Length: 226
Image (cartoon, rainbow, N blue to C red; front, side, top):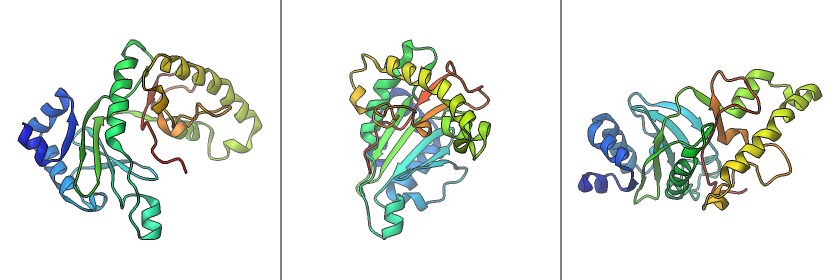
């Protein structure tokens, strides 16, 4: 197994992640393609489905696993300037979210995806494999779906959203209390006076938006502050 991990430039993997790579040939082939390419974000992986595109990375569903890719050429900035940029450090995300997943096991209504493996290639590409949160969507997307694209212009809607946002902020802060790597949780908006970064918090797809809805924290930390 060690040899296979080395060939795929795997830096860290959970027991479940190792078993997954060993047993799933299609996933292993996909990782081989991604880790051997200088521009993995342009590779076509059979059966892959785009889950989301961030400022510096792309996340796909591949063989039932969420696979996040960040390379020197995967960012919008690199595309615009035609120059390489610093990718997200997904090794750090793996470590922080692994610890957060364990920390939140005692919390019934707040979680983080289980981290499976992380690779770093000679071309300075990071590839992170994690639990696919099937049928979960971002708070941002769910809010847009519920209130429409003009919600920000409606004071009644803004007041309704604030009514559940503040209790959610408090729940998140309480859940992170005692977490040894709390200083790395820097992309939820909890350092700001109010509101939350709804793009990095997931909720069940059909959930009613409110103060008690289940939450899932993703994509921490952010390595880019601009």
